[in-house]
Length: 100
Image (tube, rainbow, N blue to C red; front, side, top):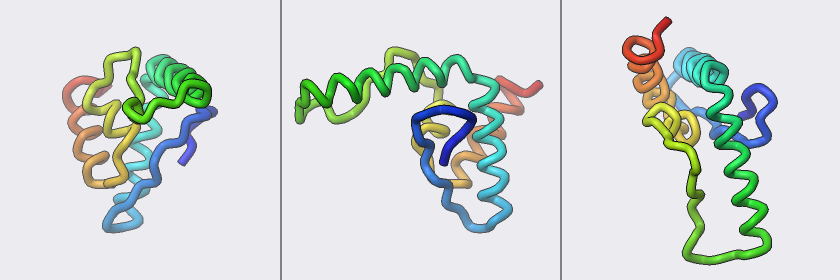
C-alpha cells in the first residue's frame, strides 16, 4: 500500500469487512498526512539503512534502527496489517492527542 508519494511501502490491511478495511485505510492516510515530516524522516532513515546494508550486510542487524522516536501510532501505521488494531489506535489518537 502506498500513501502520498512515499517510496516506503505500508503493509496491506486485513480485516473482517470491507468497511473496516476502508476505514482503517482512511485513518492511516490521515495520520501520515498530519505527520508528514516525521514520516519523511523515517523514510530517509530506512532508505539510508537499506543502502548501508547492501554494502555492509550484517546478520545481527536485520531490524531497522530509527533515528526518530516512534510513537505507538507510528508503529501501528508502519507495521500493522490488522484493520482492528489500526482503527483502535488511531481513533484513540484522534480522540486524545491529535483530535482537531
